[in-house]
Every structure is written in structure tokens, then in C-alpha cells.
Image (spheres, one colour):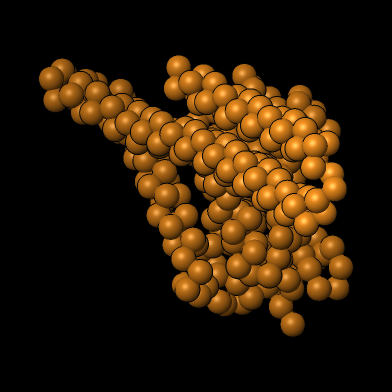
Length: 297
């Protein structure tokens, strides 16, 4: 209901702007036909018309952008609320069960495992939010060190494989030649983990993800994560790296998330003099995400 109301507001202000511009043009044309001999007044009229039209267009543009930004923030708050509330409710349920009922040892261990998984999910969500705040402060300098990028990626792949209980053939890692980068270890680990974890989550039940590390040229190394999942419309390939933005469509709306993962990836890449981008042939045709970073000299 809120989203529909905001869309109506956007349509109203766009229609209002077009209507005002049309009225101004009609009045101006009529005035020119009546006063075409007054050159100075004609010039001033042209300047005034340009200023009025520019003001209306800018006002409408910024208004629409602010409404969309508010929509994204509302969606982020809803997503974070869900991501925080769900594991807490689950942990509470299992704790109440253990407290009020006699449970055999095997089921008790299963309950503990589920609660630990929910705790990890909760901590990951909190860490994503905190990391976004840290990266957003441009005054904060990265803690640089020399990193074997291949070893770091292998560590992230192993972690995601364990987290989602995947066989080796579902999440494959193909190392390249040993290469070293100078970067903030925690930030690069977070960026790579987000790319691999996203590829798994958006692959649905049939997970087939491959991760590669290789040099793009003499100065840069790239981490390439390919999946055969939901895919991305070409119009959203750049949008998905914006803060709070989440891709649309029934295949992706059911996947839990906060809309911060890819924003963190792009921010980490920029902070280290690299870049990040996505490639896809469209919905249902899989995606490829690339993180490019400078090689240490």
C-alpha cells in the first residue's frame, strides 16, 4: 500500500511538472506573437522561460529520487527486521523447548546445531550493517597488508561450502598463478565472501557455482564468480551495486538479504583502487560477478 501510494505521488508530480511546462510554453508563445517587436523583452522572456522550466524539471527530478530512496530505505529496514527477528525467534523457540520438555540426546544436539546456525546468521547480519558504516567513512584508512589472493579466495569458498553444506562439485574453485595484493584483509575477505555466498543463495536448489582467480593484465587480478541461477536483467546490472538495492522478480524476492552485500563489494573495490561489475544474459540465464584489484608491485 505504501509503495503504491508513493508511485501515485511520483506520477502526480511528473504530471504536474509536464502540465506547468505546457502552460508556460503556451503563455510564452502567445506573448511572443503579441510582442515580437520588443527584442529586449523577448530576450528576458527566453531567459525567464528557461529558468522556470529548469526549476520545475530539477524539482521533479529530486523529488522522484528522494521518494525512491525512501522506498529503498523502507525495504532495507523491513529486510533487516526480518533478518534479525527470524533467528532470534528460532533460538528462543528451541530454548523454550529444551527448558520445558525432556529431549533425547540426539535431538538435543540437533537443536544446538540449529541454534548455532541461527546465531551465525544473526551475527553475519549485524556485521554487514556495521561493515557498511565503517566503509562509508572515507576518513577511515584501510589496514593494508600483503595478501595471497588465491589463498584468501580458497578460504572463503571453503567457508561458504561448509555453511551451506555443499559438495565440492556444486561449488568449485579454480586457482590461478600465485598472486599477491596489498589490501585490508577483513574488507577483501568480506567482499569475496559476499560474492560467493550470493551466488549460492541465488542459485536456488540446483547450485552450480565456479570461482576463478586470474590476472586480467599486468597490473590487475580478478576474482570471477559464475553461477547458473536467477540471472539479472540488463537494466539492473549497475543498479544492484547501490546501497539498499535488491533485484526484483519472484525468483529473487524470496532470498533473504539486506541489500548491502554488493554495495560492500563495490565499496571495497573502490577503496583499493579496483572495481567490481556484473555480467548476465538476462533472467534465468545465470550471472557472473567480477572483483578486480591491483596486483602488489
